[in-house]
Every structure is written in C-alpha cells, then in structure tokens.
Image 1: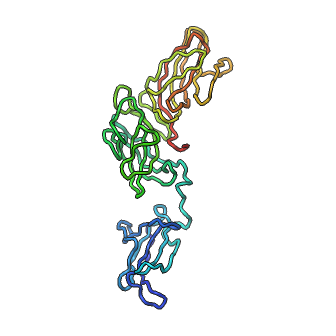
Image 2 (image 1 turned 90 degrees about the vertical axis):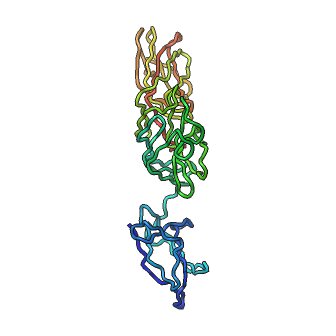
Image 3 (image 1 turned 60 degrees about the vertical axis):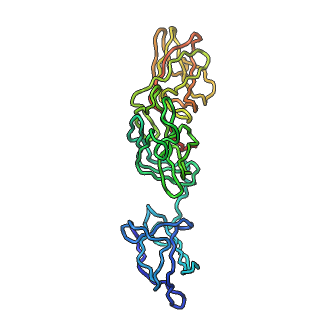
Length: 340
C-alpha cells in the first residue's frame, strides 16, 4: 500500500514559485530519514530531499503505509535550505509514535534452527532487539557456515570439537544484518562495521569431532536427535557436582533436560538439583528425591534442572557407600537473552 502526494507547485507568500525547493522526509518526531518512492509499487526510491524543478513543481511522491513504515515528518526548504514549513505527522502511517527498542526489552521472534549439517546451521527469518536495547534487528532466513570466518560464519578461528558456540544476530547502524558464531557468550569478535548484536541460541560440537550435533528446536526448547551420554557418577551422602558439558553448551545458564539412572545394593535414593538452590538434603520418605530404589535395583527418570554456566548440576545420595548411575542429555531450554 502507498499514500500519494500529488504533483504541486511550491510558492511563497506572494505567489512566486520557489524554484528548486526541497522537501525532506523523516520518521515522525525524529531526524531519522525515511524513504519515499517515485512509483505506487514502492520499488523505486526517491531522493531525500525531493527537489522541485525550476518552476517549483514537485512530481508525485509515494509514501509507505503501516506496518512497514512509521508516520512521516515533512520539511519544506527553499533552494538555499531555509526552512519554509514543517508538517508532522503527515499521511502514510499511523499517527502514534512508534514503539522504541528500549521498551522492547529482550524481544525475540523467529530466528530458529530449521536445518543443520555437521558444519552449517540454517535459521528462519525473525526479529530481535539487540542486547543494548537500542535497535531492532530484522533478518531473512540464512545460514551460518562454521568453515568460514566473518559475517554468517565464525568470528575467529576454525570449528573445534567439544566446544560451545554462541549464535548471534548482528547488525550495522545502516540496517545491514547477518549471523555470527562465537565461543564467547557475550563478546564476539564483530566483523568490520557491525556494532549491534544479540545472542539467539547456543550449541556444542561433538566430543572427538569438530562437527555440530543434529538437533531440533521449538521456541526455547532444543532437543538432540540422539541423546548424548554426559556422565557416569557415584554420589554419597555428601553433595557432588555433576557436569553435563559433554552434551550441552556451557557459558550460559540453561535448563538441562536429562535422563538419569541410579541404584545401590540397599534401599535408598538420589536427588538431582540446581547449584542455585544451595545445599539440598535427600529425604526419600517425604518425597524430596529424584530417584528411589529398593536394594539391588536401579531407578530411572527424566528431569529438567537448571544448570550453572559450566553446565553443572548437583546430586546427593542417602548412601555413604555411594550410589552409582549415569546421565544422558536429551537437550536443553534456553531463554536466548530475553532475561539478560
């Protein structure tokens, strides 16, 4: 859709034409230039300012309509750039002031994994606010190639095994956008000209192979196509730290999704919990456990537990002689910077 400003002649108060007058267009309430067009299909961008001919005639100008454009502000100046009048807002978009990026704290829509190979990651289109809350980044669907360095690749180095990579939407102030992978969850090495960034997910390459695992994504949930054995463990009545880093990213707190099995020669139980909770005590009779078993058996279950930034959880057993078991990572949940 487009709103047209029909041809008109700029004149002064005495009816004299304003030869070569200039009409500037901005987003309403700002000094941010906004494009106008020479055709109704909005395919040919006009100059800004639009300049009248020697007879003061402005040809037809087409303004973009919402939701793709905000309201316009127009400033008419004479050929010497002296302001004649200002109109704000004018037709072409909503009268209300557009929502500032600073009010869209943590906003993220789309930008999800749609496919991946061992060295590439394809993401859907989407929109997000950068991590300084000053700009909105809008990206078409695209692919990160972990075999290259720069925009739509790694920020530095080459892909390595058993390494966490954090995926960013990045942008320039002129609206150019791309994707970037980095081992840093907060401070990637930005390609030249890029100053805006937002972490949109994190992944971890496979141990022993510099390749990405196959996984699927639905919103904040990431599921591995094949579970990864993360740890075998032995815990006693004293709290122990268990690392899940073999199966999920580090560097960012996440909600681990795991399957666990444990047992002992006597009737007892085991408790898995987040390091954020402080010390926890197993109390199987009253239900404060994750797994409970009778003598010479094992128990198994599926759990969702918040990790620390090292992909660790805590565990404790009721047995001083130790309960043994194993943990496999199914996937994880990642708020992707919305709460940073």
